[in-house]
Length: 416
Ligand code: C6P
Image (cartoon, rainbow, N blue to C red; front, side):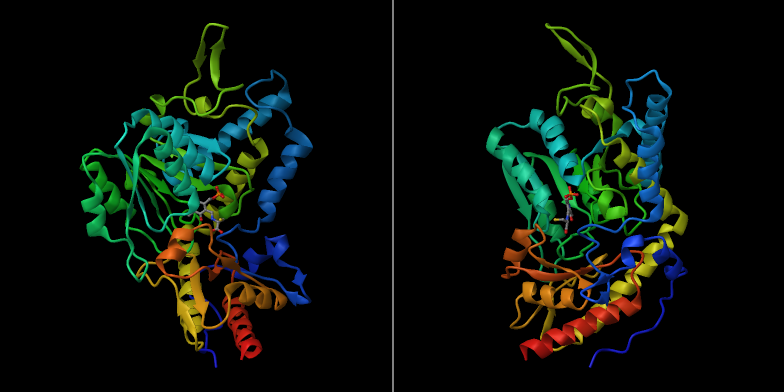
């Protein structure tokens, strides 16, 4: 039997009204009303975002920073206004500290190429943690292969927390950079990034925070964190795919070499010499994802209008309720039981492959992710190949948690 669950959440959010804003939620899959619990992979989009993108195409569609005509001016204003919205949303001081990227992956690669690479000598070290997404592993491995630098990894405990003592020990006089995930996509662990940044800064080591799974669930203030760089993706925070942002301290961005060459990132070009635009445009070569930036700003405005504290309270109640209910099912084991978790619940069921669980849940209308979650070293750490991950968004309900639990009971029936 499943654990009795409350029928409503405590938080001051009108979730039914919020659900009405998301057209994709109101459909059936395999004859059952959709329960979308794959928000860590990507979120559904509210009408406001869809409308903002459509409006751009219907009325303002033009290239930015290039045209004297009205449509181009309107597109430029909307694109640069989106930058300001992002600045405010993450608490940055200056819009010139916000670089539009394709997402978290590109933001990290940009920092690796333009900030870290020129600072590396053979034998220098880059420190990451044992719970990074591949996006915060592979760019550093590529960099180490190209420069002779060494990648060091902070181990994690059995409950999926960072070993903070080992972190301090691993910071050496050869450490040139730290890159750390704020919320693990595979475990849901919330890392003490503010403390980690303080510790690194005491040794003059700059820090990048991968905020892909953090921004949707909590108010982020990059100035309070004092991080040097902060990366996130639009599509995980109710915005479009193919757009994200890199925050970088102005003094760092000013000293960085371009990431890619092309239009819009230059001041002047002759056969002999090119001089580059100031940041952030220096890092935005080519026609950008204009509608993506506009859609992302609409998403952030939408989330702000709901109140991030209420959103966070609602989601943590969903996570707590789901954790208790799923753990009450015999044979289920949590992967990652950190004291502070956000967004996602990862687990395995004895004798059943996560992909089979995913398939049965799908037939019940419940969308979760089963796999390694692009965090294979995390799976290796726990000696498993995959987990089932249910991840929550602002529009999820306790009834949907119940549908997940019912689906898991069905899995148990099928597999005996
Ligand atoms: N995680 C997941 O299902 P992109 O693909 O660039 O938008 O985000 C990459 C990324 C970086 N860091 C973390 C912590 C992430 O979770 C992700 C994306 C998705 O968990 C897709 S693999």
